[in-house]
Image 1 (cartoon, rainbow, N blue to C red):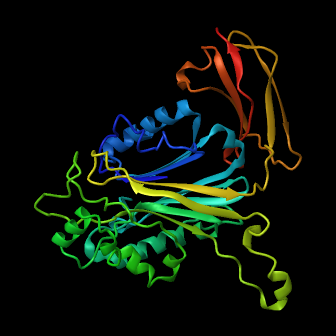
Image 2: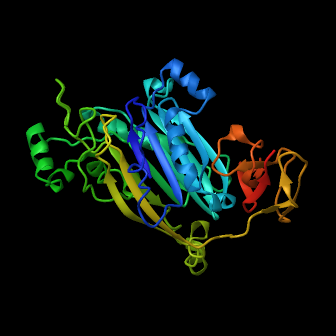
Image 3: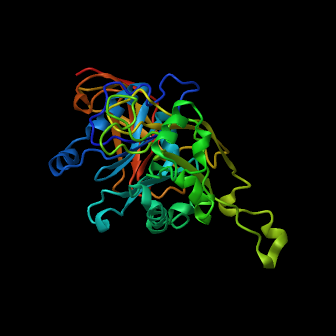
Length: 397
């Protein structure tokens, strides 16, 4: 998981460190939240017609490694992307996205939150990328904006209509919380000497968690990395401009496990064996393996923050809703046949379709070139691919 305020910059050529590509064990999902992607009117309209430069670089990097872009959502400078290994696609279902504007009276969308929710092997998860109000004295406004986003984002799902209805929620982004009270000299001295713990008690988010009940439900790893804002660009030097902004941990990654439903008074014995969403029968455990910043990138005045998580879960299902396979030998110069079967309880739609995808090759080369392909069944009702064939060979034209 990555959060980065890119300050309208173009992406670096190499994102290997950003995506932790050389880390073991290999990753199954990538969730990348960006803030302040260039959204000038001309650029924003251009990005509506073609993929923005950040999405392009990330896809070009991850596609050869077997990742597929599951979905993305953008609101002005806020961009959220989800990538998954191909093997997981049939089990990522009911994908929905939404957004909430908070900046400039909610009209332009320069601040706010964008989110993606889906069912992952039957477990309801939600990812929320936020950019909250700036400046030292706006801590209460940041809390209010965060709570407003959580309360107002809606999904067209009976069991999880709101963000906090999901079994697991990840909230991240440029939350913009600052370090209160301490002067600039003390801040820089503590950072340079590695005594980051001296600053934790005055971090506004940590302070607000002690006061706000809804924030106490969110967990965060220890801040054992240097504050990620504000830097001179293309350097690891904190702000030397006339403003001399104080360093701060503005960029954060939080997570929340849905609390168990309390026992009901009229049936304590029965209720004591049950929790919301069947959490006892299908538990999910989230553990954070890494929480750090990546100091090597200098295109922005923020440094990216990276977290890796392990999700231990019991799959609610492990059978695709659709089985699909090619029939006979396929060639680009002749008609081809395929076979598919669906589960009895699957609600198909006349708008469903089956696509042919070439493995790790640009879409403009399909289907003129032979090579390895895969068939995918897209469900309109579930807004996702729910069945994939095995990779197979197609002959050249």
